[in-house]
Length: 517
Image (cartoon, rainbow, N blue to C red):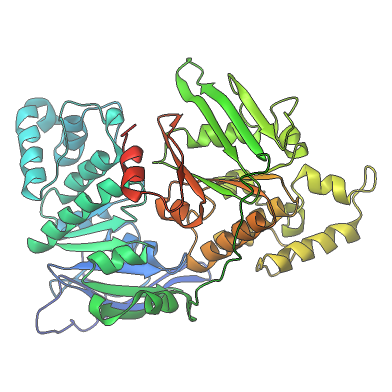
């Protein structure tokens, strides 16, 4: 760590903040990810960072953790100018970070994973017991239960894994803890203990920087809130000074009026559009991934499947979309059983899908936006004239889809790689719905999207259900499942729970997500 030239003036305040940023700017080519950011973080506070995708939240946290170096501006720790070259410098300054993607070695025990962070390899070989004791004492000091130290990490629930990551981040002289979307992978029953831990850290004078897109969490937990938009700080305020609608408006730059969705009338008396019976899938070693899955989805209904990621959601999606051949079971689409298990057969039977990874499965980045609107065999067959696709029909359809689903693009001929995440998702959703499917399977349809883009996807799904489509919503976001679904079941370790009608018992759903069944 070293001072920078032309040092800005040291921030002054009645109590010097534990960390201050002044004029922090970061560019990636022509994109200004952070623009003259001024912000103070105080000791003993939980400070929430809000903003849409691309607002600069993650870039800001990477700057504070030393993963990125600023182009202009400065950071002050306890009023002293500090220049961070790497996360090692950040750790020395007292910063720890827990990323969304955990950095644990599944095959190692809890103690061994902690040793990787708390010691050198030589210390671990010589002093295993001492390191285990130090880790246990650190966890206990902030009320963290990290389970049995000899247990293999792969056997632990997600909530315990996250607590291990927090212990790692708190090791040493950590005074500032950064948490990036910490509740995204937790069950409802695991969220409250996490919040209790964060409150304990606050009571002990630590600073918690909390990135989330869930406004209710902010109102429940934060002391102060900073809203970012397009790389700039829009406002910093105490939690008591703002409301959820005001925060949403600050995030998107316009009033966030509630959307009136058309009422749905699921056809419970009509024949199901999707019927699944005893669907089972195993891996290459014969281990069960899905076990006797059975369900029906009716016309005009959104059937939600909740669950923590990694419990068979991907395998279920792949089986229904024709990407994976089940070991046995029945998939019936609108009274038709596809003759084979591949995407073309499923689409021909009336299936459409929104994949979980839009970059890997949803778009071809190097192809044009117009060509990406037609990456569906049903659409190609509808528009083609024999073996040929007239260019006028291609452009007319592409323009129709882009306009109808509000896909913002500079050019239909530009590469899909230029689309933002939200606009790429609008294209994928629109392309699926333009086939007028009997059944739409949507897997995490709003993951990584901001409020406005998520709302657009919700409206599109609700409208499709209103027109009679049967929608299977597979999501690891419980709030999303509960908001949209008419009926809900939980997927845990490849098994599907009993089904609950709306309004669903949230406590029961959370208990099932944690393994209650």
